[in-house]
Structures are given as C-alpha cells and as structure tokens.
Length: 163
Image 1 (cartoon, rainbow, N blue to C red):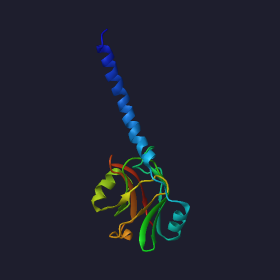
Image 2: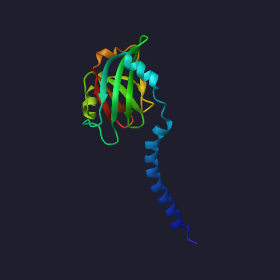
Image 3: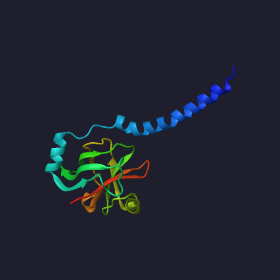
Image 4: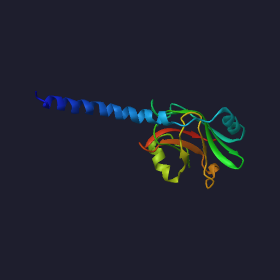
C-alpha cells in the first residue's frame, strides 16, 4: 500500500482546515472571553452625571460592515472619578482600545495622524454597554472626541464628537 497519497491528503486537508479555523478563532475568541457589560444602574448613574455626550454611528467613512459602533458614549465624573461609558455596542473584535483624541477623526488615516497626541483610556473587554475609568492623570475635557481602535490589526472601529 502506497502511503504517499494518504500523507499528501492529510497535509493538504490539515492546511485547508487550519486557515479557516484560525480565522474563525480570531473572530469568535473575543466573543467567548468578552466581559459583562455595565448594568442598568451604572448606565443610569453615568447618564445622570454626564458632562458630555457623543454618538457612535454605523456609517462612518472609516467603519465597514464588520467594524462599527452604535450608541451613546457618555463622559461622566462620579465621586471624583472620570468615566467613559457606552450605552450601545461595538462589533466584537480582538484588542479593542478606547482613545481620547485631540480632534474628531473618522478614518484610519486620520487617527494615525493624531494617535501620538491621543490618550489611550483602556482596553474594551465588553462589546455592549462598557464602562472605562479615565486615568487620573488625564483631563478628559482636554479631548473633544473619543475613538475605538483595534490595536492588533490597526483597524478603525468608530468615533464620536463629545459635546
């Protein structure tokens, strides 16, 4: 019995399964390990203490069908702590970060031009109704906009002007 065709078939089949399997893993892993979003009491408290608000919309020039956000982003100060809270959702993905930006940008190229002047607030662990504490060393009022960025793939997700 000739084992060569069997080994070739095994290797080719393994490679053909590995590529889509890896892609599916990259997509589903963030969903599987996602943290729980903020509950209704946290959202209500953020809304009541809001200093500024913005809106993530789906159809920004830098967003696409798989990478976007929808909902209201709230900048609040509660008990001396500054927070950014999303009442809405962003599409799932790996390595999402929330940034405060020195001006409103809505594309990857525009963000890359201001990234060095932007401040990373933190890692997004939940894709619906998340809340992040702004580091005490950062004055959030100095930044007129907020942006969600996928660090791993340098991908623009969404942004909002804060008013």
